[in-house]
Image (cartoon, rainbow, N blue to C red):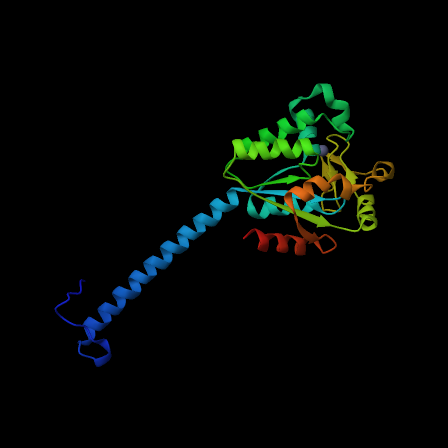
Amino acid sequence: MSIQGNNPIRLNQILLPDPIVSSIFSYVTGAALVTVCKCWKENAILIKEREKRLLILVFGRPGSGKGTLMAKVAEKMGFATLSMGDYFREQVVKKRSFKEFEHQIMNHLPVPLELVHEAVSEVIKSHANQGLMIDCFPRSIESIQFFDELMKKDYPYRRIVAIHIQLDPLVADERLKTRRVCEVCKKIFGKSREEFCCGRELKPRLDAKVQGRQNGFEEKYKPSFDRYKPDLIDGSQPPEEVLKQVEKWIK
Ligand SMILES: [Zn+2]
């Protein structure tokens, strides 16, 4: 219905018959409802788009709960995750790539930076339409420069945020002792429900590999902390609480 200017509508003085008042009322509420729905839909799309573009740099010492958090965010919010060790081991085991560095990769030893940078670039490219979490990267000054350049040149649409899951080194060490490893793909598992990987039972990880892993963590990551100023998250909370905090903070 249309409202003409020649007929003043004075609702407060009840000059209009009921059917007209109610049709005006339904027209106005209907239009408002359409606007609200439209806004809600657009907002939902916006939030989705924003999540898609979100790139979260996750820092935290070994045993701080990064892996658990990343797996939960991936499951609940559809994020892709990149953990260098897992990525390279998967490439070696499933795709038979990186033959030259197989020994380092399968024994959790460092690989050349160029290889790491290539992997980061590749994963970011192949998950361009998805939120992404990266585990403990970048770390060195060279990697920070590489990453910043990559974001500037090729992915200017990404919103980058950083978090640091903080945990006392002694507590983290205790957690590492409960870790188990798959003897086939060498993937490390926390205290989760998984019992098997690659069709085999998981084995306890040897303490020898755990020792010394906490040394100098803060100094090692100082360039990243200075550059990305991560939000601090208390890693001593149960994983569900950590997830809730991160979820609230993503939205
Ligand atoms: Zn496995």
